[in-house]
Length: 253
Ligand code: ZN
Ligand code: FE
Image 1 (cartoon, rainbow, N blue to C red):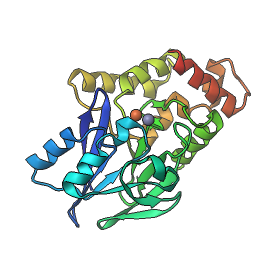
Image 2: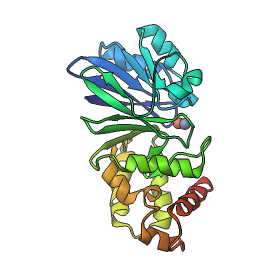
Image 3: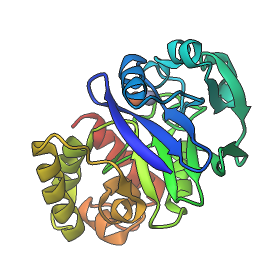
Image 4: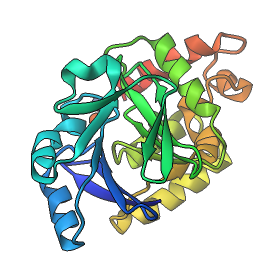
């Protein structure tokens, strides 16, 4: 499967996905239609599917225009049927959805919104995590609570370590600065920051990241680790409390 990030709005990514055997084309989280149309027309491609991780405008903004233009089918979470524009195929947690000759597993990951999902392409080890897991960050908690968000992140943590993570925004540089503030002697994090600086100074995406890199350097995925708890003066405290603390610190960073 081929994946092409398309920068949209100020810091969003939509992703064109191309299943090369069947030649099926999809787009994940098109916040606007124009950059997607431009790319597809230049490559002489049409669009079969629109995949939405959640209902926020910066993830579904292009749905209706793209659907009209290409007669594409909109794929999203069943529980959010009422707020995903143009939805045709509604899926439940743990359901598999066929995309050409491959398939994605739907993983319900509430917290940022109640109906947020991850599309996990098991064979390719590719996960679209929307605004739940970012590189070196996690999404703000708008509709769910901290417990839900932590459980959702824990679901993602159980995927294979070499899973490639494609998230909804280019927030990585700022996220790295935050992680470094509280986890400054983490060598993996420091090395990752050097890579990020180089990529961003050349205006290149820091995405995809891998789950392994995130497990080692994303502070939100390290709330169960004793070394981090000690750095936060929260030795022996519950993971959930540490996570809430880190999320609160990020909200005011
Ligand atoms: Zn969002
Ligand atoms: Fe977003």
